[in-house]
Length: 394
Image 1 (tube, rainbow, N blue to C red):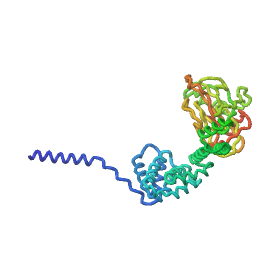
Image 2: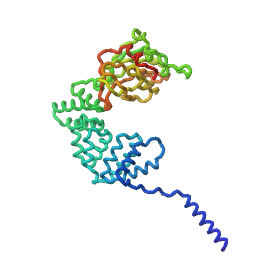
Image 3: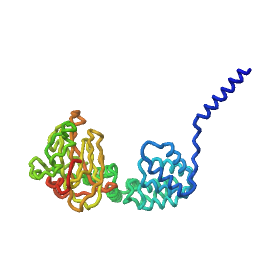
Image 4: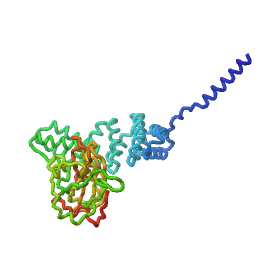
């Protein structure tokens, strides 16, 4: 009996140790005590970066989900400057707060945020989404004034609403509505759809012109892009004369003017030079700009680098990735008046049919896609990178 009692005591001690070592369930989230604390939590979530700290971030998102209705707009403001990951964390809490609040969601306050164009676009877009769920007629009516909206998502919805109404209208009003939609649209797929409609109705429109592609370039001869090493860089890593502002280039007979007739502004270097592999070429365009910051947007299946007025802007040594309009985007400061843009476009050694394309397309836009560049004459190599601008390898 004593031996059995001893075993029972030992077993009890062992089980106690096991249960003591087992992690306890996390404490349930507690709502922020003040609006200042709620805003601090929202800011913490919005600034989240990197893969770590998920448990703490999840807990803080749970706390945001418990805020009262009159704190919702204040916490929403943090979304404007959020990191990509932070935006996801903050939205997870805010969306659950809205779902929990139901009819208590402050509809009038959301409408005020949507109407305030000084607010960050994604703050206004999310407020409009919530408003649509709570007061659809009000949210829909607000789109009537948003054809020129700085928030691209709201502008897109306004264009869609206009097109839907146009399709039910008589011929003359329908065409007028499609013209308004074309002037307002910034998303490429919407613009392509509208241009197709005009073509089908006997009025072809130049898609490349609407999208604002830079179409006239002066293209160099081919340069070597074979593989090198760290001691002897070639190709993408090497600064050939066009990058150095070589004074002999303006008279080089090998440079030729190429004007794209492609509907998406593609500059085909195989056609302009010759179908080759392990080569690169430079293309220079002269553009007129209003001055100030603008987005340079380039798409290519090849490795590309871009300079603006001789200053390196971006470089992407990626070959045969998926090609898309506006594949790479970077912001540059432009002078008011004449500016030069230079592209370095490289081919590697792959010979498969899908790896033969050697081309790029480039346009210069404001942050929501309005074209800003115009061209009045062909590019001149002399102004590609001017020495005064201290052009170097990207």
